Length: 453
Figure 1 (tube, rainbow, N blue to C red):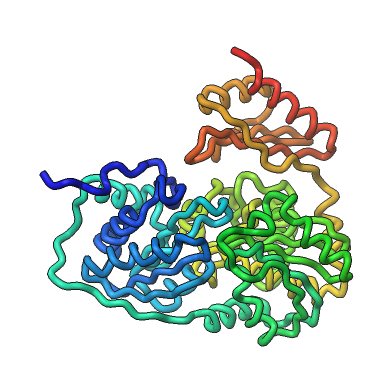
Figure 2 (figure 1 turned 135 degrees about the vertical axis):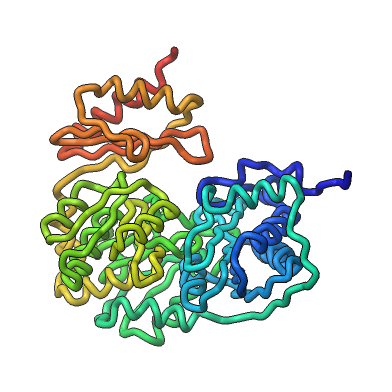
C-alpha cells in the first residue's frame, strides 16, 4: 500500500462550516492540495474560483489548492487578494462551479483556513460536502482525471464595489473613518474614494498578515480603541471597522460609542422593510429583542434561526428572505446571492445615516436604550451538554427553547448558552432591561460553571 501523505493531518481543522487551523502544524500545503482535489470531485462542471487573504502563508495554500484542482482537470480562475464577500459575489456573478477562499477571518496570524462555496453560492458545510472532502483526504482517494486543467487570473474589485454600491445609491458626503485592522477590508477604500461622495480617513488599510496594530476582530470592542480616538479627535460623522477577511462591519458613532450588531440590524431592517413592505427578515438566536420587535412593529415577518452562515444561507433560500441579521456583525442580502457582506452592510448604514439628517447617536438612541446585554462570554467546559442541563435546571421557572443550545426566556430578560462547534467552550449571552439583572445572571452562571463537582 502506498504511503498517504495526508493521513496524519489533524481532523479537527474541519469544522461545521469551514476549515481552520495553525499553519503549518495543523494545516499544511499538502492538505490544501488534497482539499483542492476533493473539491474538484465534489462541485459540478465549470470554472472554480480561488482567492486569498493577506496572511503570510495564504499564497502558498492558495497555490496548493489550485494545484489540486488543476490535477483533477478543473479550470481555475485565480482572483488573488480579495475579501471573503468578494468570493461569494464572484461565484454568484460569474456563475462559477464553486469557490475556495483562503482565510482564517479574524483569527490571529498563526492561523489560516478555507471557506468553500458551491454553485449558486451554496456553502460547502459539514453536511453539504465538507465531510466528504475530509474523508477523501483521509483515504487519499480521488476520481481519476486524464486531463489537466488551466489557470487564468481575474481582477474583480471594480465589479464588486459597483455591485455593493447598488444597495446604497443615495450616499451623502459624510466624513468617516475606516479601520481595516490590516485585513482585507482596506482594499475597497480607493474605489470608495473614487466612486462615492464619502470623505474617508483610513486606519491600518494596508493588508499585513502580522496584524501589527491590533487584532482584526471588531467583535472584541477593545480592538476599536484606535477607531474611537480617530472619530472623536477628528470630529468624524462615524467610524467603521472591518474584520480580517472583510465580511463583517461594526460602526462607531460620532461620540465614540459602539453600535452593536443588533442595533445596526434595526437600522437595516427599517430601510429594507420601508422599501419592501411585509418582507421576511431572519435573525439569529443571539440577537437582541429589539430586532424581532422592530420587524413586528414595521409589519415584516420575522423568523428566528440558529447562529452560523451555513444554516442562515439555507434558511434564506427556504423562506425567500430579503435580509438576515446576526449579532456578530454578519448581514445577509437576498440580492447578494443570499450571502453576507461587511461592505454592503456598511454602505447601507452610511446611506441611512446621510439621509436621516441626524447624528448616528441620535439615530440609534431609541434602539440602544431598551436593553442591556452581557456580550458573548466564553467558558472552558469539558462536558458541555451536562453543564447546559445544569444551567437549565438553575433557571427552571423560565420558558425554554432548544433552537440553538438553550435559550431561557423571562418577561424582563433572557439568556442563551450554546457550545462551540470546534472548541471545548460554552458561549453565554444575557440580555435584560437593567445592568443589575445582567450582572446577577452572569454571576449565577459563572458560579455554577466554576463550582467544583
